[in-house]
Length: 165
Image (cartoon, rainbow, N blue to C red; front, side, top):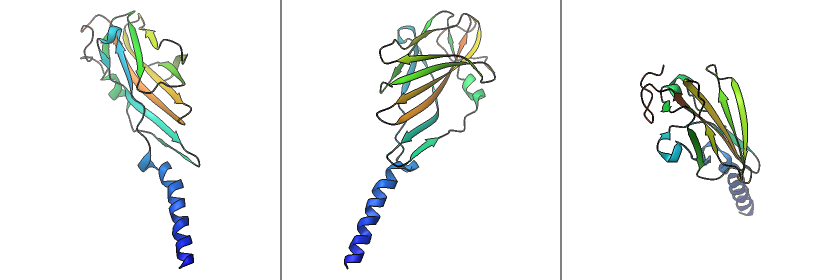
């Protein structure tokens, strides 16, 4: 009977160590909201890679997303306007990456705790794709988000892009 109790104890301890770090218990990604000036229009954000690490192991998810789908959700914005980032849980650090049409990095900017989280929209017309890489050190999490905007005067400002590829 004693061996059974010890075996059950070790199984429970092992389960308590392993289960919290499986895909079944991966916490939801931290929500991020991207808006145009004064919060007038919310820009759809796709969650990409998301990782959470635990005491013994970690786990990442990699959604099967197509960048073409994202450009069809591009929101029209005025050239030179401002886009603001708000996180449900403030990250310790995040990087904003501007990508070209092929998904290659064009520019990168790091934002620290005390900085404003906003960018000025480019003046060049066309579809602009951005990635946000956030890190929450105390919670051992990181996430990658992507959004698209369409700059130009056609189609107005604040709506979903009607003519995006």
